[in-house]
Image (cartoon, rainbow, N blue to C red; front, side, top):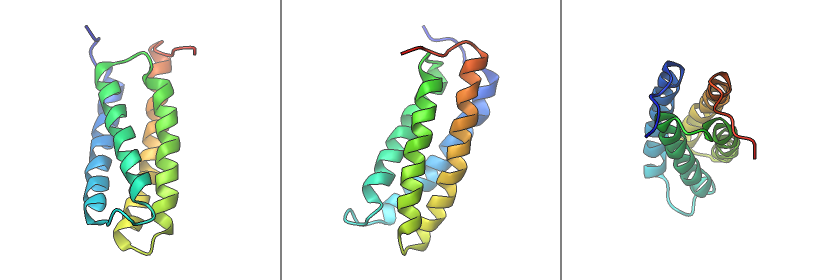
Length: 117
């Protein structure tokens, strides 16, 4: 049985869910051959997993959020390089999400949920 979500994660879950909604809207407008399509799809998957991990209070959440921030960074860079206004808007959302993932990763450390690999 998983422990309740620390109150500190609640805000981060909401922020990630908001970012996910914006990223999904952008992805829906893109053709699969668009340069940032795969990176954005992978980022959406990573953010979905991050939300699930924060909600379940997994002991691996902190480390995963650090990795998720890197995936978001890559997708943001790819979206920024596109000549599409939706992609550029999504890049801004992803830059915000990078900071959310980084801040949320410190929550697990506060609660002792950090796993040594």
